[in-house]
Structure formats: structure tokens, C-alpha cells
Amino acid sequence: MSNVLEIIQARHSERGPFDPARPVAREDLGAILEAARWAPTPLNMQNFEILLVDDKELLESIERFRSDASEAFLRESYAQLSFSEEELLAKKTGLLASMFPPAWTDPEAWHPDSDSRSQLAFVSTWMPQTPMLLLILHDAGKRAPGSEGDALGNIGLGCVVENMWLMSEFLGVGFQVLSAFSDPRVERQMRGLLGVPDRMKIDLACRLGYPIESTHNSVRVRRRVEAFCHHNSFGSKPPMFDEDEFLPGSEHELNRATRRVSSLGAELKMPQSKPKPYAELRNSPVQVHDVAAGEEKPA
Image (cartoon, rainbow, N blue to C red):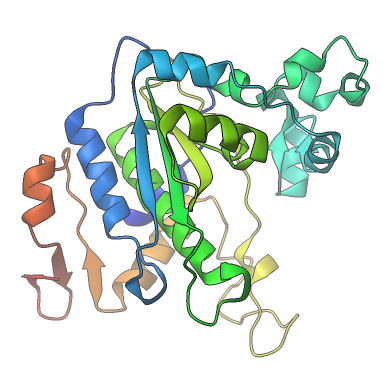
């Protein structure tokens, strides 16, 4: 994929099993971490740490962690699910229920006395056949200036994850975010196992690996641009989006959006082949193509 927008549109959660006999290549891992290094953070504080876990015994220990989903989480998640592709396409938000274990989508299984309670575990559901886990941490003693609750710091962490996710998509490395690792019970177990200092908060984890069978072809939906974009006043539709011309999900949409990006004057040139090895990638400047001048120059 040579177009930035194509990679953004293709980015997805890889919920299937990864090939346990194929560890994440050092070159791919280096590029993913390099993408994290250049993520924007408030005032360039870079208040994040990434803990890589690929030791088989450690991964097996993590898989045994107790982490049942709460009924509140299950009920709130249930409201976001569709039980047919037709329903999902009509709603344009949420996910297909078939992407999750059956017990997660069956309210009767959520009762504390249900025989299906064992199927509601977070970590053990997603950890099998995971060759690498990335833990994202931040120093809870720091916060972005003037940011109540460190909302800006959380946005920065989101940018770190998104950069890694997009690079993983580009490289063909499966990527899935696991929020269960911020659960206090799981976090305590992780601290003891991996020696995480008390000041460091575990925000989430990411599974990395090469999919045995990709879930990329599952139905994915998004709202139309005019459904969330307003012009000058809330509720006023932007005049640049004509429903007869701008059809989300179509090739016409992609071409038109790409032209709009290019018209800004500079277009990021993505490599046509796999990125350079990490050592070269880290030291080489990003090449930007100046549309007006018709020449390349370091960013």
C-alpha cells in the first residue's frame, strides 16, 4: 500500500490466533517502535514506556491471570453489537457479535452462577498463540501541564498506539489492543511478574504476531463524513460534501480525499517495499515530496 489513507482504512484489530512458530522479526519490531518514538505527545513530554514480553514462560503465566469481564462492561458492550451484517451496515457503528466468544453476547451467561462464567475471562481469551506482548505504561506522577485528569497525556498515549498500529498494518504484522491489562487485578499480577515500578501505570497491552488466517475481510463500518462533520454551527452540514458525489467506502471517495490531501502542498511518500532495517530507518530523514516544486527534500 503506497497511500497513507489506504493504510488508515485497512487498519484493523487482528483477533485471530498468531503463528506461534513465527516470532516478530527484529526489523518489523524496530520499525514499529520507531513509529512509536515519533508519536506526538503534549509538549513533547514523551511520558510513555513500552515493555516487550516475548519469553514463552512469561506469556504462559500471563495467560493464566484471572480477569473476568464485569457484568457492567458486558452490558455496555452488548449495546454496541449487531447480530447480522445487515444490522451493522444500517447502524454504521459498533461490531458484529460473531467476532466475540458466544458467552460474551449471551446475557444469561453473565449471571455469577452461570456455567459459562469461565468463558468470560479477558486475558485467557486473547493470549493463546501470542508470540509477543507490548505493554504501554506511563509515569502516573507526571501529567501534561494544565490537563485535568491528564486528558492530554491520554491523547498522547493514543497517538503512540495509533502510530504503532499503522506501521504494523503496513508491515503485515497482526495487532490487537487489550484493555484488560489496566484492570487493577491484572495490573497487580503484571507488576509482580515483570517488576513494574509502583509509579508506572499500565495503560493497556498490544498483541503482536503474524496471523494464521487474517480477519481483515470481516465487515467494517464507519459513519458518513457529513454525519459527524459540522460547518460554522452544530448541525449545519458542510457544503463541500455532496451526497451524490461523495460516497464513503467507494474508490471515488478515496481518490477525491487523496487529491484533497495532495492539494495542501506536500504529500508523504510511503515506501513501495518493506521499510529499511531499524538502524537505517532511525537515522534517515523522512522524504517529503513538494508538489509545487516537484522535488524531494528531507522533512
